[in-house]
Length: 318
Image 1 (cartoon, one colour):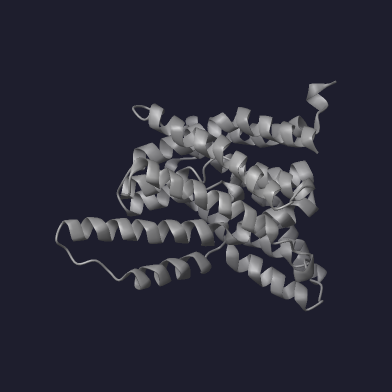
Image 2 (cartoon, helix red, strand yellow):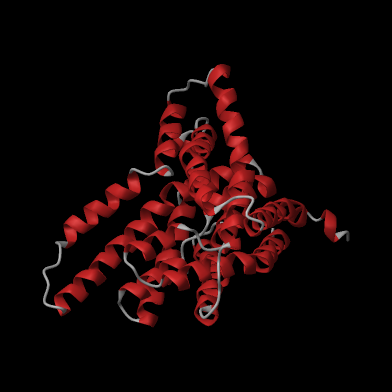
Protein backbone atom coordinates (compact mmCIF):
# COMPACT_ATOMS: atom_id res chain seq x y z
CA UNK A 1 0.00 0.00 0.00
CA UNK A 2 1.28 3.47 -0.92
CA UNK A 3 1.41 5.36 2.43
CA UNK A 4 1.83 8.73 0.70
CA UNK A 5 -1.51 8.21 -1.07
CA UNK A 6 -3.39 7.21 2.11
CA UNK A 7 -6.38 9.59 2.64
CA UNK A 8 -5.27 10.41 6.18
CA UNK A 9 -1.75 11.31 5.03
CA UNK A 10 -3.13 13.32 2.11
CA UNK A 11 -5.41 15.35 4.42
CA UNK A 12 -2.88 15.84 7.23
CA UNK A 13 0.10 16.83 5.09
CA UNK A 14 -1.25 20.27 4.04
CA UNK A 15 -2.20 20.98 7.67
CA UNK A 16 1.26 20.22 9.03
CA UNK A 17 3.00 21.97 6.11
CA UNK A 18 1.07 25.18 6.76
CA UNK A 19 1.87 24.98 10.48
CA UNK A 20 5.54 24.40 9.59
CA UNK A 21 5.53 27.44 7.28
CA UNK A 22 4.04 29.51 10.09
CA UNK A 23 6.73 28.19 12.44
CA UNK A 24 9.40 29.26 9.93
CA UNK A 25 7.79 32.68 9.53
CA UNK A 26 7.74 33.11 13.31
CA UNK A 27 11.35 32.02 13.77
CA UNK A 28 12.55 34.29 10.93
CA UNK A 29 10.50 37.21 12.29
CA UNK A 30 8.61 37.57 9.01
CA UNK A 31 5.54 37.96 11.19
CA UNK A 32 6.52 40.09 14.16
CA UNK A 33 5.04 39.61 17.60
CA UNK A 34 3.01 42.81 17.38
CA UNK A 35 1.30 41.55 14.21
CA UNK A 36 0.17 38.23 15.71
CA UNK A 37 -2.70 39.84 17.62
CA UNK A 38 -3.89 41.61 14.45
CA UNK A 39 -3.77 38.35 12.49
CA UNK A 40 -5.63 36.61 15.29
CA UNK A 41 -8.34 39.29 15.24
CA UNK A 42 -8.65 38.92 11.46
CA UNK A 43 -9.12 35.16 11.80
CA UNK A 44 -11.55 35.20 14.73
CA UNK A 45 -13.58 38.32 13.98
CA UNK A 46 -13.88 38.18 10.17
CA UNK A 47 -12.83 34.92 8.50
CA UNK A 48 -14.20 32.51 11.12
CA UNK A 49 -17.72 34.06 11.37
CA UNK A 50 -17.96 34.01 7.55
CA UNK A 51 -17.06 30.31 7.45
CA UNK A 52 -19.41 29.34 10.27
CA UNK A 53 -22.40 31.33 9.02
CA UNK A 54 -22.03 30.03 5.47
CA UNK A 55 -21.53 26.42 6.62
CA UNK A 56 -24.65 26.42 8.78
CA UNK A 57 -26.87 28.58 6.53
CA UNK A 58 -28.10 25.49 4.67
CA UNK A 59 -28.44 23.11 7.66
CA UNK A 60 -31.92 22.37 9.00
CA UNK A 61 -32.59 21.54 12.65
CA UNK A 62 -34.15 18.19 11.82
CA UNK A 63 -30.88 17.04 10.21
CA UNK A 64 -28.78 17.83 13.27
CA UNK A 65 -27.74 14.97 15.54
CA UNK A 66 -27.34 15.96 19.19
CA UNK A 67 -26.23 12.60 20.59
CA UNK A 68 -22.60 13.32 19.62
CA UNK A 69 -22.78 16.52 21.67
CA UNK A 70 -24.03 14.62 24.71
CA UNK A 71 -21.44 11.86 24.33
CA UNK A 72 -18.54 14.25 23.73
CA UNK A 73 -19.18 16.53 26.67
CA UNK A 74 -19.96 13.72 29.10
CA UNK A 75 -16.41 12.51 28.43
CA UNK A 76 -14.85 15.98 28.45
CA UNK A 77 -16.49 17.02 31.70
CA UNK A 78 -15.54 13.70 33.30
CA UNK A 79 -11.89 14.30 32.38
CA UNK A 80 -12.12 17.92 33.57
CA UNK A 81 -13.48 16.85 36.96
CA UNK A 82 -11.05 13.97 37.27
CA UNK A 83 -8.05 16.18 36.46
CA UNK A 84 -9.09 18.74 39.08
CA UNK A 85 -9.61 16.01 41.68
CA UNK A 86 -6.20 14.51 40.87
CA UNK A 87 -4.30 17.79 41.32
CA UNK A 88 -6.44 19.32 44.08
CA UNK A 89 -9.02 22.13 43.93
CA UNK A 90 -7.18 25.39 43.18
CA UNK A 91 -6.74 27.86 40.32
CA UNK A 92 -3.68 26.13 38.89
CA UNK A 93 -5.41 22.76 38.89
CA UNK A 94 -8.47 24.11 37.04
CA UNK A 95 -6.40 25.84 34.34
CA UNK A 96 -4.32 22.71 33.67
CA UNK A 97 -7.49 20.57 33.66
CA UNK A 98 -8.95 22.89 31.00
CA UNK A 99 -5.77 22.52 28.95
CA UNK A 100 -6.30 18.74 29.13
CA UNK A 101 -9.86 18.94 27.78
CA UNK A 102 -10.18 22.00 25.48
CA UNK A 103 -9.47 21.04 21.86
CA UNK A 104 -8.24 23.41 19.16
CA UNK A 105 -11.39 22.74 17.13
CA UNK A 106 -11.41 26.12 15.43
CA UNK A 107 -7.84 26.90 14.38
CA UNK A 108 -6.93 23.31 13.40
CA UNK A 109 -10.07 21.18 13.60
CA UNK A 110 -12.28 22.97 11.05
CA UNK A 111 -9.62 23.00 8.33
CA UNK A 112 -8.56 19.42 9.05
CA UNK A 113 -12.06 17.89 9.11
CA UNK A 114 -13.04 19.65 5.88
CA UNK A 115 -9.90 18.39 4.12
CA UNK A 116 -10.18 14.85 5.50
CA UNK A 117 -13.92 14.16 5.59
CA UNK A 118 -15.80 16.83 3.63
CA UNK A 119 -18.81 19.07 4.25
CA UNK A 120 -21.05 16.43 5.85
CA UNK A 121 -18.48 15.80 8.57
CA UNK A 122 -17.96 19.52 9.04
CA UNK A 123 -21.60 19.91 10.09
CA UNK A 124 -21.03 17.39 12.91
CA UNK A 125 -17.88 19.26 13.95
CA UNK A 126 -19.57 22.67 13.87
CA UNK A 127 -22.39 21.30 16.02
CA UNK A 128 -19.71 20.44 18.60
CA UNK A 129 -17.96 23.76 18.07
CA UNK A 130 -21.21 25.69 18.61
CA UNK A 131 -21.36 24.57 22.25
CA UNK A 132 -17.70 23.69 22.87
CA UNK A 133 -16.71 27.06 24.28
CA UNK A 134 -20.11 27.55 25.94
CA UNK A 135 -19.91 24.29 27.92
CA UNK A 136 -16.21 23.93 28.72
CA UNK A 137 -15.28 27.59 29.15
CA UNK A 138 -18.39 28.27 31.22
CA UNK A 139 -17.66 25.25 33.41
CA UNK A 140 -14.05 26.40 33.67
CA UNK A 141 -15.04 29.97 34.50
CA UNK A 142 -17.43 28.94 37.24
CA UNK A 143 -14.96 26.45 38.70
CA UNK A 144 -12.16 29.01 38.62
CA UNK A 145 -14.34 31.61 40.32
CA UNK A 146 -15.26 29.05 42.98
CA UNK A 147 -11.54 28.37 43.49
CA UNK A 148 -10.86 32.11 43.75
CA UNK A 149 -13.75 32.49 46.23
CA UNK A 150 -12.36 29.59 48.27
CA UNK A 151 -8.95 31.22 48.36
CA UNK A 152 -10.51 34.56 49.25
CA UNK A 153 -12.48 33.06 52.12
CA UNK A 154 -9.34 31.31 53.33
CA UNK A 155 -7.66 34.72 53.39
CA UNK A 156 -10.56 36.37 55.18
CA UNK A 157 -11.78 38.33 52.10
CA UNK A 158 -15.32 38.68 50.74
CA UNK A 159 -16.08 36.55 47.63
CA UNK A 160 -18.69 37.27 44.87
CA UNK A 161 -21.92 35.25 44.87
CA UNK A 162 -21.71 32.06 42.80
CA UNK A 163 -24.90 32.87 40.80
CA UNK A 164 -23.46 36.19 39.66
CA UNK A 165 -20.30 34.36 38.66
CA UNK A 166 -22.27 31.73 36.71
CA UNK A 167 -24.37 34.31 34.81
CA UNK A 168 -21.28 36.34 33.87
CA UNK A 169 -19.54 33.22 32.54
CA UNK A 170 -22.56 32.07 30.50
CA UNK A 171 -23.10 35.54 29.01
CA UNK A 172 -19.43 35.81 28.05
CA UNK A 173 -19.49 32.39 26.35
CA UNK A 174 -22.67 33.17 24.37
CA UNK A 175 -21.63 36.62 23.12
CA UNK A 176 -18.59 35.28 21.32
CA UNK A 177 -17.37 35.07 17.67
CA UNK A 178 -17.86 31.28 17.68
CA UNK A 179 -21.50 30.53 18.69
CA UNK A 180 -23.11 33.73 17.34
CA UNK A 181 -22.52 33.15 13.58
CA UNK A 182 -23.40 29.45 13.97
CA UNK A 183 -26.73 30.33 15.61
CA UNK A 184 -27.41 33.05 13.03
CA UNK A 185 -26.62 30.65 10.18
CA UNK A 186 -28.93 27.99 11.60
CA UNK A 187 -31.75 30.50 12.06
CA UNK A 188 -31.30 31.73 8.49
CA UNK A 189 -31.45 28.14 7.20
CA UNK A 190 -34.85 27.60 8.85
CA UNK A 191 -36.35 30.43 6.74
CA UNK A 192 -35.86 28.37 3.56
CA UNK A 193 -34.14 31.30 1.86
CA UNK A 194 -30.83 31.06 -0.01
CA UNK A 195 -28.05 33.59 0.09
CA UNK A 196 -27.91 35.78 -3.04
CA UNK A 197 -24.72 35.32 -5.09
CA UNK A 198 -23.55 38.86 -4.38
CA UNK A 199 -23.42 37.99 -0.66
CA UNK A 200 -22.53 34.31 -0.87
CA UNK A 201 -19.44 34.81 -3.04
CA UNK A 202 -17.66 37.24 -0.64
CA UNK A 203 -18.53 34.93 2.28
CA UNK A 204 -17.11 31.99 0.32
CA UNK A 205 -13.85 33.87 -0.34
CA UNK A 206 -13.51 34.87 3.32
CA UNK A 207 -14.31 31.33 4.46
CA UNK A 208 -11.71 29.80 2.12
CA UNK A 209 -9.04 32.10 3.57
CA UNK A 210 -9.71 30.93 7.12
CA UNK A 211 -7.99 27.52 6.98
CA UNK A 212 -4.55 28.49 5.66
CA UNK A 213 -4.23 31.70 7.68
CA UNK A 214 -5.38 30.00 10.91
CA UNK A 215 -2.89 27.14 10.47
CA UNK A 216 -0.01 29.51 9.69
CA UNK A 217 -0.94 31.43 12.83
CA UNK A 218 -0.70 28.21 14.88
CA UNK A 219 2.87 27.77 13.58
CA UNK A 220 3.80 31.35 14.41
CA UNK A 221 2.55 30.83 17.98
CA UNK A 222 4.54 27.60 18.27
CA UNK A 223 7.70 29.42 17.23
CA UNK A 224 7.34 31.65 20.30
CA UNK A 225 6.66 28.79 22.72
CA UNK A 226 9.32 27.65 25.17
CA UNK A 227 9.23 24.32 27.04
CA UNK A 228 12.16 25.19 29.28
CA UNK A 229 11.54 24.09 32.89
CA UNK A 230 7.98 22.87 32.22
CA UNK A 231 8.47 19.81 30.03
CA UNK A 232 7.35 17.15 32.53
CA UNK A 233 4.12 18.87 33.60
CA UNK A 234 3.36 19.90 30.00
CA UNK A 235 3.84 16.28 28.92
CA UNK A 236 1.20 15.02 31.38
CA UNK A 237 -1.26 17.66 30.17
CA UNK A 238 -0.51 16.86 26.51
CA UNK A 239 -0.92 13.11 26.93
CA UNK A 240 -4.27 13.63 28.68
CA UNK A 241 -5.40 15.94 25.89
CA UNK A 242 -4.12 13.98 22.89
CA UNK A 243 -4.74 10.42 24.08
CA UNK A 244 -6.95 10.15 27.18
CA UNK A 245 -9.72 12.48 25.98
CA UNK A 246 -10.22 10.76 22.58
CA UNK A 247 -10.28 7.37 24.33
CA UNK A 248 -12.97 8.59 26.76
CA UNK A 249 -14.97 10.17 23.93
CA UNK A 250 -14.83 6.91 21.94
CA UNK A 251 -16.09 4.93 24.95
CA UNK A 252 -18.86 7.47 25.63
CA UNK A 253 -19.95 7.55 21.97
CA UNK A 254 -19.98 3.79 21.53
CA UNK A 255 -22.00 3.39 24.73
CA UNK A 256 -24.67 5.64 23.17
CA UNK A 257 -24.65 3.67 19.92
CA UNK A 258 -22.85 6.31 17.83
CA UNK A 259 -20.90 4.88 14.90
CA UNK A 260 -19.68 5.84 11.42
CA UNK A 261 -18.69 9.38 10.48
CA UNK A 262 -20.08 11.09 13.63
CA UNK A 263 -17.93 8.79 15.79
CA UNK A 264 -14.86 9.51 13.66
CA UNK A 265 -15.36 13.29 13.83
CA UNK A 266 -15.89 13.19 17.60
CA UNK A 267 -12.76 11.15 18.29
CA UNK A 268 -10.63 13.22 15.89
CA UNK A 269 -11.95 16.43 17.49
CA UNK A 270 -11.01 15.09 20.93
CA UNK A 271 -7.53 14.16 19.66
CA UNK A 272 -6.81 17.70 18.47
CA UNK A 273 -4.14 19.59 20.44
CA UNK A 274 -4.99 22.00 23.25
CA UNK A 275 -6.73 25.23 22.25
CA UNK A 276 -5.35 28.71 22.82
CA UNK A 277 -8.40 29.90 24.79
CA UNK A 278 -7.03 28.19 27.90
CA UNK A 279 -4.07 30.57 27.98
CA UNK A 280 -6.51 33.47 28.33
CA UNK A 281 -7.70 31.90 31.59
CA UNK A 282 -4.11 31.48 32.77
CA UNK A 283 -3.47 35.16 32.04
CA UNK A 284 -6.68 36.38 33.63
CA UNK A 285 -6.20 34.41 36.83
CA UNK A 286 -2.40 34.90 36.86
CA UNK A 287 -1.60 31.22 37.33
CA UNK A 288 0.34 28.50 35.43
CA UNK A 289 0.93 30.76 32.41
CA UNK A 290 4.28 29.26 31.42
CA UNK A 291 3.05 25.67 31.88
CA UNK A 292 -0.12 26.38 29.89
CA UNK A 293 1.65 27.79 26.84
CA UNK A 294 4.26 25.00 27.05
CA UNK A 295 1.42 22.45 27.13
CA UNK A 296 -0.19 24.02 24.07
CA UNK A 297 3.10 23.88 22.17
CA UNK A 298 3.95 20.33 23.18
CA UNK A 299 0.40 19.11 22.56
CA UNK A 300 0.50 20.56 19.03
CA UNK A 301 3.93 19.06 18.33
CA UNK A 302 2.89 15.63 19.63
CA UNK A 303 -0.26 15.80 17.49
CA UNK A 304 1.95 15.22 14.46
CA UNK A 305 2.10 11.62 15.71
CA UNK A 306 -0.93 11.14 17.97
CA UNK A 307 -3.48 12.77 15.65
CA UNK A 308 -2.13 10.89 12.63
CA UNK A 309 -2.41 7.57 14.51
CA UNK A 310 -5.92 8.43 15.73
CA UNK A 311 -7.15 9.23 12.22
CA UNK A 312 -5.58 6.06 10.81
CA UNK A 313 -7.16 3.98 13.57
CA UNK A 314 -10.60 5.48 12.91
CA UNK A 315 -10.19 4.89 9.16
CA UNK A 316 -9.33 1.25 9.86
CA UNK A 317 -12.28 0.80 12.24
CA UNK A 318 -14.70 2.27 9.73
